[in-house]
View: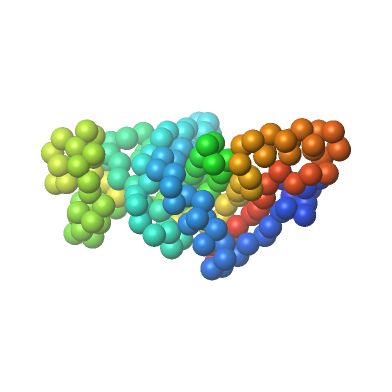
Length: 181
């Protein structure tokens, strides 16, 4: 969860519905890689980079993965995932929570693979889009937290300095919590 009780509460937003979905779409639009975290059988958190598909965000994020990967076994036991996105050069950070579902070997899965396929996946799936190990991983996002700076790096540097001198009374960015439903 975002820091709802911090000194910068005037910059904290609670977004829902369409407004929340648009905020998520805006933040993840140019961030290609997410760190996907799942829960292992022993309760430990496992994370790995995953390429987000270039699709308009409508509450669902799509990934292609290998049916034999460890994350698939973890998701069979616990469908909860967290997707962390970061774009330090633009000072944008977002953590999304949702539930994953796995689609493999069905006509629907094959159609989605063909829709999402690009040549870069050949590095992981040498058999191309018909590789029998490709699995579609769908994440239905339920909520998220974000933080983004609202100025250039130079101005942010001055704002951080001013916030330190004034005891934190200078806005250094916006934070919020998003519910997609």
